[in-house]
Image (tube, rainbow, N blue to C red):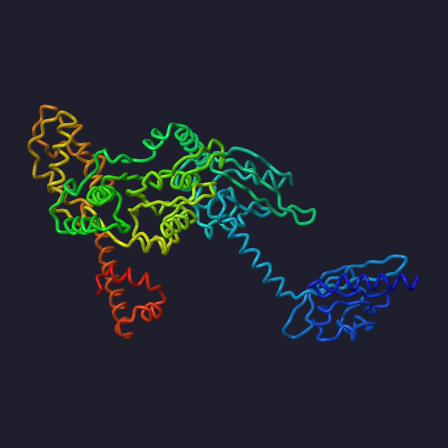
Length: 580
């Protein structure tokens, strides 16, 4: 019997030696039979020194009342430990119990780490998640759910779901889940968000239990409207992918043939110095073969500039292949750009991508900031190596392509928001071109209006030969957030209302519905204040950059280090602010 007891004791000792918690076996008399190294270290002793010692000598105040409990004890003045006991025993060993000691601070740190990790995970999934307690009070909401409903987390934490969504608590699906203590779902639910939009979601509710007690519930939602729109897009694109090669490209790619009509610099209208500067800069870009990055607000004519650069370049006899990165679902964009091999996904066939179609010519990537970051890294690699690999393929294909890309948000802002990789931007922006908004070149409005009126005269079979001065005065007083495109639509809207026999475009034909989108600048004090603030910020930044450069004798590396920014960002800001 003693031999068996010794063998089992040795087995226990080997078993607990690698456990990170402090662990000891105490016999019925309270003596330490076995302990691991962690247990000994917590008390600053050797293992051998603790064997056969009474547990009450090691842990003051420990007695039989502690058996089967979990308590916190202060073994050292600066440290609190979690103490757990677990009674055990059998005929061979007799009665004994385990003592488990764990550093409470480590437990807290681990819990905090796991909480943050779970929040990161929940904030980066496609579903909405809401957690409530037993009283249906909101304990947590992830970002997707907050965006669904137009809510702010700090304003709903602790409030009942019936208060947040304005419904009777007893009809709530989470309340039903808590009361039944069972999974509830799947179900389809309609409700009105905080900004007045009706939302249709599919949901699944899960009870949260601690032991036998239900302490809350978790709801997982998926926006059905987004899912249905995505399915429709995928089905539509799948149909296109099954077309013949030429038909496929004609659907997704604009201007793929060198014979098709493209814009040239002569098509860009304007007498202002701002637009003349942009045209001159673009003509210089046309003589180069370097990548061009075009920044301009929506409707400023970025694609017209891109086509003009290609038309005047040495690649003009080769294809100009264009794609709007925001118009294609992220899941399909990679295959469209790089091509696919048969079987990589359902219905996939061996297909050239846009890089291969543009070989020898120009690839125009519109709204590149809509491209997922993972795909941006693959694009950067393709540009660096001048080789691409089809989706699902193993072979690298050499390509000779010039890239022209655009965005409608300031690049530095995109980089700061982690929507555009800085390394990709600096690779694409070897030549940087900025298109001015219409509000900054108001002197061009007269010319643009006359051009659009003449164009719509032919299209609509109208005969407008005179434009009232009131029209020009009114148009020059507006902000034009949609820029030249919005002006064109404004003219088109007005001319639809003008009778065919009316020769004068007068004020009475001005569209009414545009007033809510554009206000006179003279009355837009808030806009003026914002522009003044931005101008002041730019001046302050300019002074700060110049000061740093002077302090370091013009050394970019040292100045960037002091400003806590990269050299590339400093170069960009110096160029943006006109500092030489």
